[in-house]
Length: 192
Image (cartoon, rainbow, N blue to C red; front, side):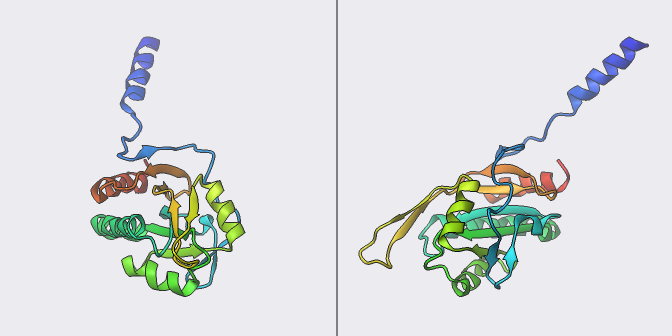
């Protein structure tokens, strides 16, 4: 009888494989757990990551004058929500600016929801922005332009995805196709 129980236990353990995500599984990561201080959303409300518990959350750091990576990522995330159908309401996309000098609340309010009405733009002062980026292992650096206001900002191009319980789970590389991201989010929404 003991052998039968042991065999059944081994078979059950062998059948319960962890989910196979398209993106990099970083479950248990020791970073990106919360904003270093509350950030301000594009309506003027203070926000913490914990405010979105109960939804899958996608976080992307960028800036509104970004010529390629940021609009491409936000467009892809809008397509992800479309692919998710009704489950799209269970996902919150957060765009955190790394250019607080130029990305005013008004500019974020015009830019971010233009990709999808549910998307939220977040900002903070330069010190809080730097501390938040550090807490999320995000790189960004100004690159001088032809005048003081025409600079660009080099920045990390990945996104992070949190499960509805608020745990960091996935690292999504820039350029991942929306179908694969949507499939990963469906797994997280299903409790995987």
